[in-house]
Image 1 (cartoon, one colour):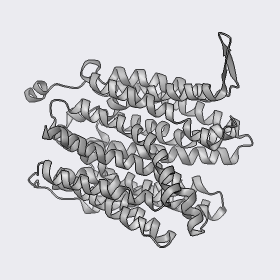
Image 2 (cartoon, rainbow, N blue to C red; image 1 turned 135 degrees about the vertical axis):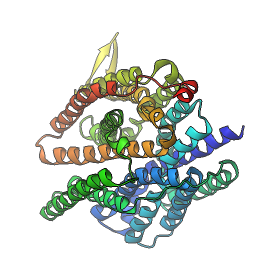
Image 3 (spheres, rainbow, N blue to C red; image 1 turned 180 degrees about the vertical axis):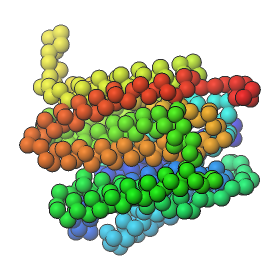
Image 4 (cartoon, one colour; image 1 turned 90 degrees about the vertical axis):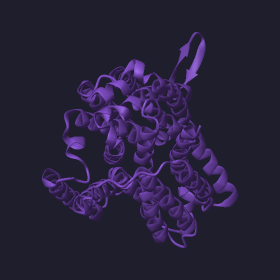
Length: 460
């Protein structure tokens, strides 16, 4: 019974992260007006968390392999909780951004450490349970906007951060009591590699964020400078990885054929999940003429279908394998993106008029099905090749997924800003991403066909 409480506890951290992320988006306009600041500066309340959490994922994965998963998980929860307290009492926008930085370090560690703990606690069923993580985020995406709207309306924007604190404390207490401690391994943290990687990731993602959020000449110049620095540091990091005895991100996890295929696939998946989804409300308002309320609700069908599909797929991974769900899910995602790019006023079906709102909701439901089918397999693929380094693998995979989303947001922002017709801009974005997703789909066949059973692992 205690094993399942461990799963519930680490899952609660992921749910907390998902709720917090969507709730803060609802509170964002109120935060901006409360401090009387510009949208460009206030935008960093959202951007800094994404930058830090993306960078923290692979570093936390490595730290959990060295210092132990329990210690790293509890440290991540503690940082997230402390960051929430500080955000709730922040007296100005500059300190709020700084405190979101602290919160992001903790939030970035949730997924890799949770996956590592589950893999160690449930060695015979880790594929299904890690796959189930995929169904937790849609739940948070449904709860977050509604809870955030109520909290902000009733108690102000600071309540969004106060909400995190009791849950964070509960997770810490239960983790201390139930999760088994591990003996520290004879290894070390590659500080030079960590510094090069962190600097490169921040510069590259920061440069893309500036491009996506402003078109001023100074921003273009600064973005170019950051991208150049990021590329230079990334080259230095790759050279360091080739020479280091125990690099912060293992060579096999980055360059091994199946791992590289999984990383690229998850990069494109992130562009679909994070990138495209960020613009669907704008698409609904500007192209279909929906209200702000309707544009938010239009994301719910995707969350519901993704939750259902990912749950079913997770429990069927041992029978279906990895490739079949990823192929099927990718086909549905590509079809959905093409349908999104076709602006339609609706149609008549059996004498009943299907309006544009219902049509878009149906496409979003279909897109959620594709994502829910593909995601559990994409999360799990290749981890049995290095079962003792699950946290590191999941951390790197999460980084690629979030980076794909960040780059997608930057490119789509530029496209919509520079093109003469927003409708045509969205069509190009949806069709383009559909074509890219289809183009990388052969990488699925470079990954393992199916999970291995416990007995097969023991024979290896």
